[in-house]
Length: 338
Image 1 (cartoon, rainbow, N blue to C red):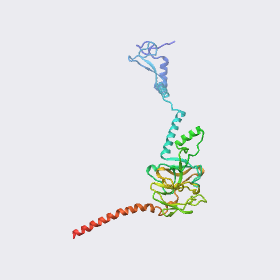
Image 2 (tube, rainbow, N blue to C red):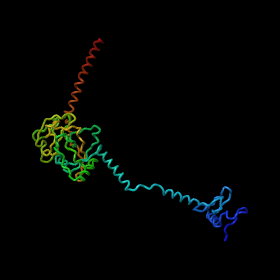
Image 3 (cartoon, rainbow, N blue to C red):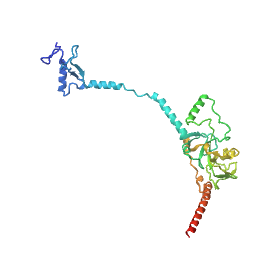
Image 4 (cartoon, one colour):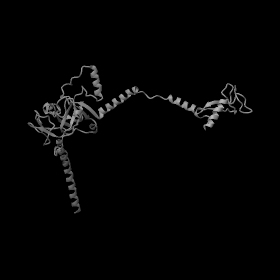
């Protein structure tokens, strides 16, 4: 059996490549490939120019693998990369982000409120969910005539909180969901009515109506069928103080609104600082989805004339002395020129 073969006159036995390795290199050359392609072994010479077969006595070189060995090493290194986080580990993070976003939306943008009574029928029904715009008040917007608004109890309008559940688990869930705006709070004392008059307006309703604002009678088709505009509580005329509003329910005979609280501080009016925001849409149930626009009767010509009369009169009173002073100076100048 042949153990080794000399490759030259001065090469010792056992230091050159074996016959099998020479045949492998010859085969690779015949196929048009370099000996180290596709995983072929490559013999590397040592610094003294000699080679080795990988035996114990080989000191001048070694056998090594070509490109395939390097690629396999790269794949091994890639498998050690960090694996993607599982869905169940990411789920708590996603829930936390969703809750934070819901809290921000509820605090600054939109909040859902539930309708607990019949005072706004037929515009709103018991159990409806309305979305209230909380963004515009942050920019100084004030309630306008005809808007449906949610406001905090000014004091004395609601005698007690609505009954809450005795189940501690259900109560805890409701508190959490109400905190982030997904459920109405059982502890907050909020009301929802329609703005009839704003600061500076004069409002009244005699007999069976109609309601009159700044001398203009309102046409109110949204009133509950069978009710009169005054309901059973005529009032006025009442001058609404600045930065306050006069509110009434659309179900006039089933609404404890500004008419019934005239003996309280503010004379039945509500401070604009107590207003949470304007109800803009009925969001639930889906079958009752609708917007809550301002009725056209509140945009009739002349309804703002009384409110704008005071600033106009003040401007005129301030302009008269200036005109008289200017005229006096012109007269003096003319006399000097003469």
